[in-house]
Length: 448
Image 1 (tube, rainbow, N blue to C red):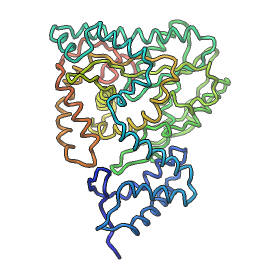
Image 2: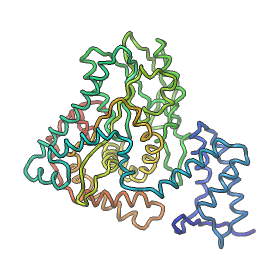
Image 3: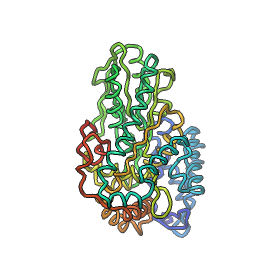
Image 4: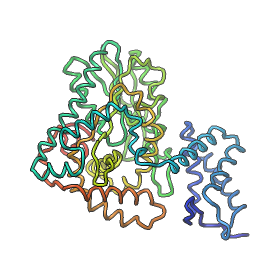
């Protein structure tokens, strides 16, 4: 019996350890993307792929990643799993295109955000002398940090009030208000503030917490590190959410499930919910713009807001700072404060976050009725104080780890950026009503 290979060759020629469990995980991930949940079947298919690989490759002739993926596609098609095979092929193609066209602009995805919004944000930044890291540092040096906080929060509040006004103008038709946006953009506080403004105008809301519609954690795909991919819309029971929304709109009572985040288990039919006359459903969701959640609901009944950290500030290298890096740091702080997660877990999980955003969030920005800018320039000096040294440590830890290239590159980039920003240690000028408090603690709202 020939010895089984234990290494594979990556696309860049690097030789890394072969992890057999990745095959079944990849197949299951593709199945989940087309609403399949048969983990056992995915494992059986993975075993067939492994058998084929071991028959055709050896220690002296290890396979390349592309060859492994070719065999996965072949087995899926031969075994009659055409839909899963198509999902796997599409995912593979998308990643191939990303590798070929990866640019700074792509990271910003400004092409998906209306130019007018970008322009307005840039004009505001220039007018407030916050259009560059150098300008930000100069204002901090003048003792103007509290002023920066006030100006930034006013701009954010103005955006929310503008969205609220549009909803009020359409109040006769609207039955659902959605607050969507990528991870750590500020959805939770924005939802609270938006409902506050609308309540003052006499609009009643009932919040539908879609977090309770997660499938059991064991049904989410995992990678070779045991990390669950719960960032995709398929992590949610979209069919049940859609059914419950339609029932509520019909005046029926529903029983909302309960999801225990500590155990990763969902219990069905727990909390009764029914709309009163004139009440509006309020949904705060990462995937609020994703079509299946509101499939079949008349568009005139839905108002969709989208929030993103649309920071328009150039670094010392002349390039605009990346929105995704702001949100990465926010999530690190929030999950450490509120959920007890080590920030390094956020860093190593972030590639899942970005992948889900690129496939299931960014493409739907154009369907939003109003865009809210959730970036506040004063968060940068706070981040620099809280996280710079930790990013230095992570950069050093992952420097030579071939399996953690993504984490290393992000740590290096953020470390280089934070080193250019003046640190602020006194956070007292940041009010409890600031949505940035959602991430650093001390928020006046229920944001856990």
